[in-house]
Length: 106
Image 1 (cartoon, rainbow, N blue to C red):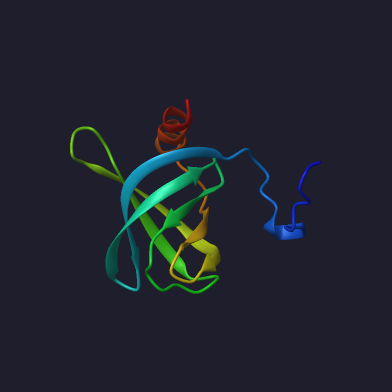
Image 2 (image 1 turned 45 degrees about the vertical axis):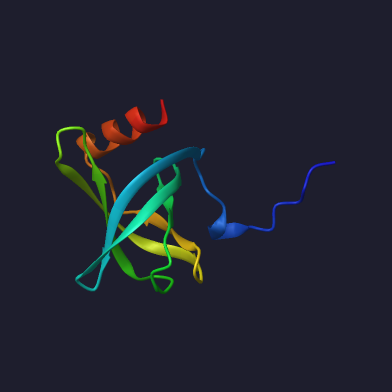
C-alpha cells in the first residue's frame, strides 16, 4: 500500500528531489545561522535548522565549495516546520548555480 501524498497544488514539487547531507549557512534579515540541507532539487531545498522563519520570507543559502568559497542561492521560504526546518524555492538560477546543483545530486 502506498501512502497518500498530503501535498497538492503549489506545494507539489515540479522536479525530483535528492537526499543530501550538507552543512550550510543561511541568512534572513541580515542574520546568518547554521543549517544542513537534507534534500535538494533544481527548484529548491529543505534546510534543517531550528531558526525561526515565515512562509514567503526571503532567504539566502550559502553552499560551501571544496576551496573554502561559498555559492549563494537566493530564494523564498515555501514552508516551514517549527524547530525542524524549512523548504526554500530558489530564485532563478545562474548557469554556475545550476551546474553546482547537478554536481551535488549526481
